[in-house]
Amino acid sequence: MTTALWPLQQAVVQQLRADAPLTALVSGIWDEVPETAAYPYVSIGSITELVDDAHNQRGLNTSLVLHVWSKYLGFKEAAGILAALDSVLDRRPLTVTGFTDVSVAHQQHQELRDPDPEIRHINVTYRVWMTKE
Image 1: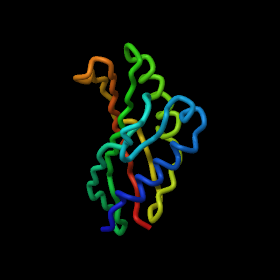
Image 2: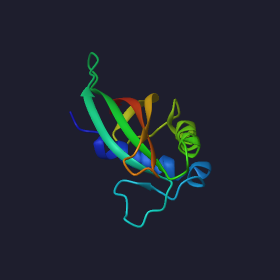
Image 3: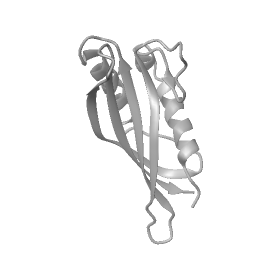
Image 4: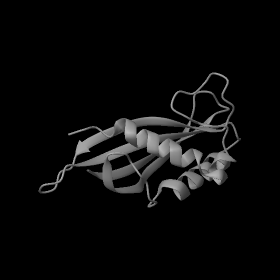
């Protein structure tokens, strides 16, 4: 089975960066966050793959974690960014190179207070199912 780690990350980042309402809310969407990145921003977290074959088809059941980072007092700003992420990814079409029948769904999210009292953080997990071409 060929991994979808990199093609999935590329597809998600491309789709997020192409969405004007989302990019108006954040300073960037990062794999590796630069030291100079301004808040708020979104970073790519972990991707976990499970083989999910069906009959004669090779498939993957994947978890994709994104992180929303904010310095707004309270969670209002981060929650707005989460809503924008959902408008781009949740049950929306996604083209992943080498895969078909790609389905994305918001699975869960969690608000977190960072040890730095100025930082708010929401991690969100999307479930991505796909079939190998």
